[in-house]
Image 1 (cartoon, rainbow, N blue to C red):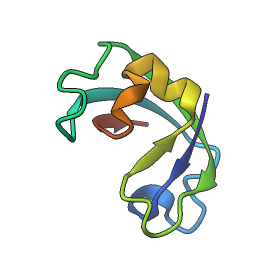
Image 2: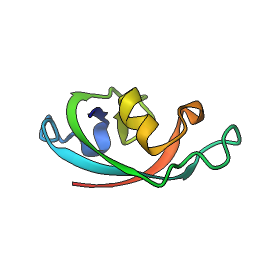
Image 3: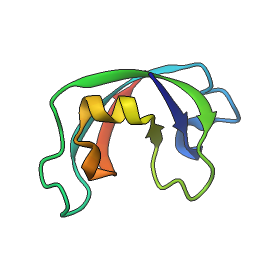
Image 4: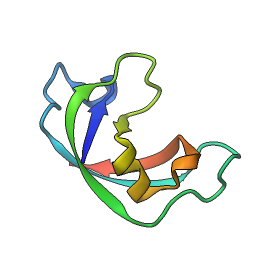
Length: 81
């Protein structure tokens, strides 16, 4: 699974190639009140999410669907390397 990193962890390309375990912790909007599946996913950072990304890690659709309902669009996460 792949993802893009925002400025929060990009560190001048140092995050590229790193793997992070990501887990949904909750909803960010009223659309899907309980989006989390309870699972986690390991993603490899392969790209940069430019300023305005509004997140720490931008997950691929496949990775997002493992940890949350895709209809949620945006979720709160926790992650570790």
